[in-house]
Amino acid sequence: MKKILIISDSTIGRHFIQRAIDTFTKDNIYYVIQPKAVVFENAPVSRFKFFEFDPTSLYKLSNVLKMEFSQVFIAMKNPTDIENTIANIRISKKQLRIIVIDHWALKLEDSNIVQVNTNEILASHMFDYLPNVPVIAQNVGLGEGEIMEVLVPFGSSFVYRHIGVIEQNNWRIVGIYRDGKLLLPEERRMIHPNDQLLLVGDPAVLNSVYRAIKREIGQFPQPFGTNLYLFVDMLKEDKKEILHLVEKAIAVHAYFKNRLVIKVCNPGDIGILTKIKEKRDERVIVDVDYKESYIDDVVLNDVKNYDIGLIMVSSKMFAKDKMREILFDANVPILSLAKRSVAKIRDTVLILNDNKDLEKISTTVFDLSSQMGYNLELLKNESEESSEQDEIVEHYRNLSAIFSKNIHVNFHHDNPIRKLSRRENFLHCIPFTENVLQAKGSTLFSTDIESLYHKLNSYHQLFIPIKI
Image 1: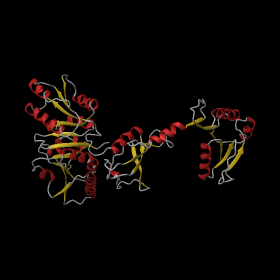
Image 2 (image 1 turned 90 degrees about the vertical axis):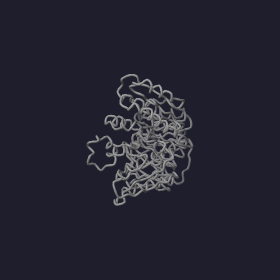
Image 3 (image 1 turned 120 degrees about the vertical axis):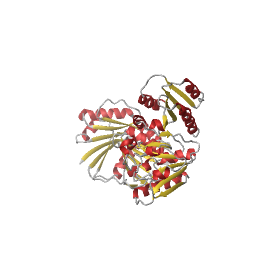
Image 4 (image 1 turned 90 degrees about the horizontal axis):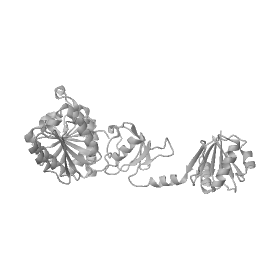
């Protein structure tokens, strides 16, 4: 049984006492000192003892302090009265923990005093009502943002995704509030628009998760970055194809409002370099690296310095094992440009399998397809019974409804790669996982679509990272 001392002569103090009365606990007994008595009719006499005297009186206060209290709460209107009351307490109780309602930022140099700054609390509470700002728990845990509540907007990248397919590293969804009810997270539970997600995790990670949840359609290449990037190594590209590669990158860039950075390494042909520089305008930057730099340093530094959200390379460059590893580390979407025309692309195609990573990349696929005006097609083997594939189809159909973007589920019976290789043109979308990094020779007997991406590398391919 803990004894709690409350010293009050203010409105906040009265509200605090009333809340203590309304919150039943048999483990606490409250002793309340008030200079002028306020009657609380519903206060149980077994748990509340009331005194009426001035707490700045050392003689009267010391009589009460003969009892052993675990904590003292002070809510008074006058800062001088607070300081004198604390001085009286410290005469007989040197280490007693004191919690003070502080309107004035008092300088109380005592490690056993907790100052509750009312101005900061009120400002923080008002801040929680601002739109597009995460609500952070401040009275539980560390209060540093490790507990966060986020409203899922209608066009969020998390809408209609199953919790089980959301990669949660150093953070977790621990609750969903929907229609005034708390739903506990389950792998097969789907997130709906206007759900309130309760998140727990590392504060820095949660800030990134918050931005990912709030991301809506029509912002690609966000949240990966702002600008587009074409990497050209003149020593490793076919000279006849370099200008065609640049033209394709500019054609892709035309669909977006952001800048295009053309990075040229090892500039060995002045004529080609001059023609590339002629392409620049206020939205196109040509950055030439005349030093013999390491490719990984060049690309990864540029991703950071230019805030890159989409990297474009030739399919020949992407086929190099080392280059794929560098691009994987960049953690942004990679567009592998083939020799076919970009202007003639009409469809975005995904090959379904039991890998739930296709659900993780869905919003990026919808966003890019919408901005570029492509049809969206899912290729599914009709002979396979798969609940995982059915969930993926359900997810894409739900997104189709909220984004007003039609999708077509195309059923097939034979090898999907063989079926697609007979088509003239399309954009093949693939989750960018470690399976893509495998050497071509090691995938000879593989049936994994990601490992066999190279079977369709004569078409343009978009590799989308699955990490937030």
